[in-house]
Amino acid sequence: MKKIILCVCVGFILFSLSATEADGDQDETELSVEAENTEELKYVPYPEKLVPQSQRPRAISAEDSEKSEERREQNAKNSSTSTEDYVQNTHDTFKYGLEENISDLIDELTKNEDVRFVDDIYDLFHVTKSNSVRQKILTYFSKIEDPCLSDYACEVINDPYDTKKAIVSECMTYISAVKCKEAIPGLIDLVDREDEDYFTQALSTLGDVGGTNEALYLADFLDRDDLSLAQRQSLMRVLGKIKAVQTWKKLSEIAQDEDENSFVRMYAAEAIGAMELEESKAILIELFESDDANFRVYVIKGLSHFHDAETSEVILQALRDTQYKVRLEAVAAVKSLELSDAVPFLIYRCKDTKEEAVVKNKCYDAIAFLNTKEGNDYLISVLTDKKPSDTTKATVASALLEYNHAGTEEIIALAKDSLTSDLKKNLRYALGKEFAKYGRPEFADICAEYLKSSDVSTQGTGLDIWAKGKYESVRDAVVEISKQDGESAEGEESGNKKPKKNANAEKAKRILQMVDSL
Image (cartoon, rainbow, N blue to C red; front, side, top):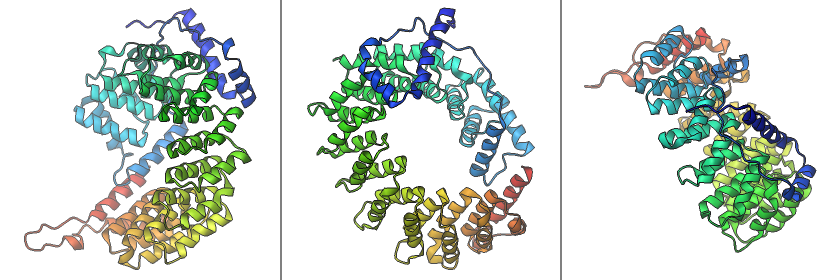
């Protein structure tokens, strides 16, 4: 397929895209003015489909390298991915490996966001005949947001009909991830065709990469009566995502129309909120009085874009809604808007014995995030009180450790207590997994306690904690475990049973090798 790169096209696209990039800088006043003057603006069709110039993967920055190393440590605790052997084996696999081996390797590199082998992967993409491998490579470059495959993705979008549907779908995901604006003309063409295979995802992708001109294009769809219900629902969501203020009047009418399909109304309500126009707020506050609980959920989604006392009051009241879905969305809005005034409401929800567990868990998280004295004191009291279940304590500990504002001493004390009783093994394991996420210096002593345990799983968790924190004061204990090559106690021969190897000894060796190779 020819790459159409004409001067007139480039000039046009640069003009259109510069307008797109300017969208984010508009304040509410400008948006309101634009919404009121929609008739002065018209969609300008793109003269041709575009394909960007081909490019190699971008140079690896120090920040990318550091992030990649940290991710590898998190996800590869029991094996070394930093040794020379691993690096050489990876190069060899890409050159000579079977499809199955290559696919598994790319999955691992994607999970770790490992950027050391981008050139190998890029070169493989252009020679492989496997659609499965090609799809996984697109997923990999989507994850690390590298635009090196933009030319290929645009070519597929411009003419997808000779390409596997899974590849076309992955190309759209990739375009969204790397914000490839050159794909816009091709996406518009797919939306125009209303092909059931591509319409919804093309529309969604257009919402991710489009701007003012695309909003004007999509506005024309609102007056069409030939769209299916599913297409109309998708359109509502995208118009909000793209902040198509030119469609505000029509969307606000749809949101208020009680004869309209309920799902279309929901998405319209969310969309006008996402546009962040002052006019939307008044409408949404009124709509929150609807008897439809699902509709109220989307009203709260829309209101979560506004930062003022009037909106905050509605969200606080939503925390008391009779439907748990509304309460759940209100908790999300509290966190998004950082409403510290909501902490007493959240605490009440946590104490309510009839409250849904899913709501309570989100409340614990929001309280820890908001970091108020009242909230922190309450969460710590859950840890120190004997009445709450171990499951609840583990959930609270997870929230406190994630935001790291308070409670670390109490969590460590709780872990030490769990080490003294096998009745608390599940709590012990859960807390250990949390310690292993962060590698903070204050976890060194509790790491040593886990390593001293005679319980294989507890000791293994201690190794995970050490792999993350690399505590020098605890290294000797890890070395000692690595020397225990004999059979584990639970693996002693009994009858015809074969002896088991000491799994933690092998694990300790791998971890030491990994740490020493860094």
